[in-house]
Image (cartoon, rainbow, N blue to C red; front, side):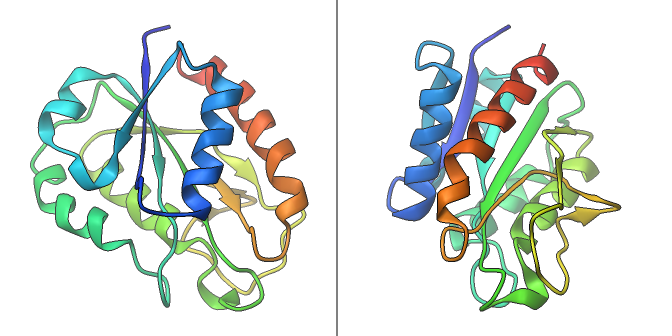
Length: 168
């Protein structure tokens, strides 16, 4: 398995903590952290496997650092690359767009030919709707630090074990 890039904003609090849990579960020698706010085309050229952090902002939006990079992303051929996405959301406070950013980013990446891995079950979550949901699964790992923080470590560890198989 080649080295994997994990891309998250170093300036976030909750996403950074989840990213650190992913890195610890994955193994620091197998993964390389990249600040999402410094993301460029060269980073995407360098790796084949990616773990992206996509917290949902406001009423179902991508963070501004992803919005700024999307135009560059849309011009790329990502057909030989695999992406796994985790995101943070609030099932109670924003039940109508829980973890939408995961789904938004997955849609953009798929339009560029990328393969999305790391789908997880929607079981155990209570929300109204989510762009991250396809059938009975999310297209990534949904994390709710506001209402289910105690489940985060177990969910991350299980997801990372799944990714290790899917990234091969």
